[in-house]
Image (cartoon, rainbow over all chains, first blue to last red):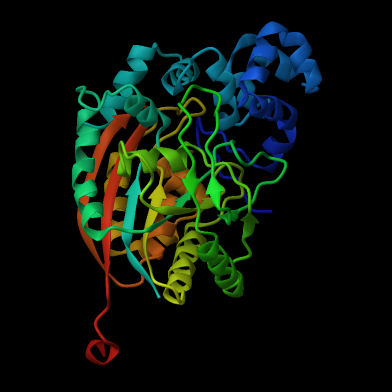
Length: 114
Length: 288
């Protein structure tokens, strides 16, 4: 196996994460469909149980916490569909992960262009 | 034979689709981005391609982790967009070009690129947003389309070297296509950005500007990066550079830059735009 190169603050969605996060990502993939989003909102426990989420994944969903979701094997592209249920965009989830306000996060992005 | 008229590399950020739907192109945040596309529209009106090959990455609309092809080629008569879960309006359908798709598939596999073939394929924002940017407000799309996807979701990802070689193989396939058509290659995504982790919001302007310059004049220089280096330099999702590199690889002639733009930020991303014209090479006897 090739050596893993750790990049600070940068999760790599590899085979280990894909195996660990399969149920969680499968649930989030289902959120492409409006009927499934509505079913989740109506009964979150039942919907998570249907996909067989592990306790760690269920807790991360309950906390709406992106870093916890990633640690539980979530992939950001599927998690974005979960975030969509709450109307969160990628600045909202960026701010949450970096512990910044959304305004400060947007300013950080703007500063990168100057 | 198919004429490869050139390549366009463009951002595909979902928020762009939202801004188009809401008519925000002239707002201060959006104007520096959208204004750059006027020159692209002029070029497209002049060169008038009839087919667009769109090289992009699916973000979890068509492909899930149950089956994740490294390279996939659409071979459908029609491609549809669908709800992606976070509110982007659904585009109308796109006509395919299955005859050219199957020629590409045959040529690529003969060339040892063992692609996945898709006779049904949903196309996501990375396909639809560039189409809306390049042909805004049209009643019907003026080109037939062929989607080609590169896996940038689940590591291991194909290397920059391999993606550039895929593009070169696409170029050879088009050069050997016997019926007349005018093809534009569209590579979508990038430039630097990162959505996940505590490094979310990472943007690397010097690296982006170097990539834009190399995409025009020396794309082979970008093939030396390993994927972890690319993740470090461009951000987790900045690896979409692979799509642009493949598009550049398909240009088999003399490449001339027609237009370019770089603007930061749109959403969480640095945006890069390039229009590269593919001009016939001088005859071999003169070049020698």
